[in-house]
Image 1 (cartoon, one colour):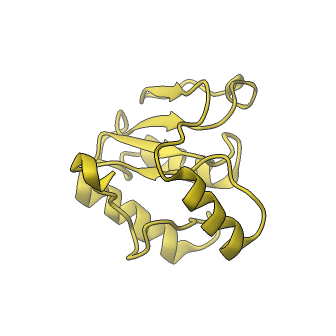
Image 2 (tube, one colour):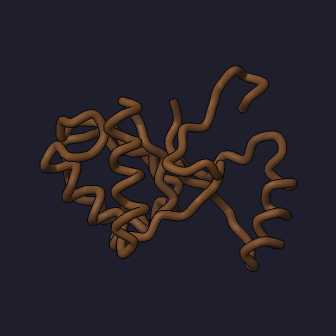
Image 3 (cartoon, one colour):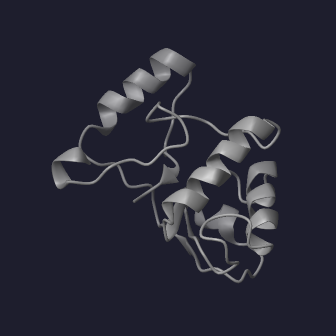
Length: 129
């Protein structure tokens, strides 16, 4: 990512983190970061029907997430097509990828993830700038 002159915009100093819908402080930091950064799209690896997706959707529907209008940010889902089959219509665009994109360095990340958090990961969520 850095070699391509891109950067990761994050709500915390860590490049990779998890946001829980129940953690009001972390959720508010994420929400404020999205409002501040004005990114047009957000990559989501959460469950489409899960608590986090519902909470972000509720805030965005009110224009209280992203750039302050209910049409953005657009959502890019890393979930499977089966999981996305029941998505509700929204005022913002939603796109599902056929498969998770694993860029150069994925195996190094996956090993570090497994060592730090246990288990394996198939996708990574965050937002791009």
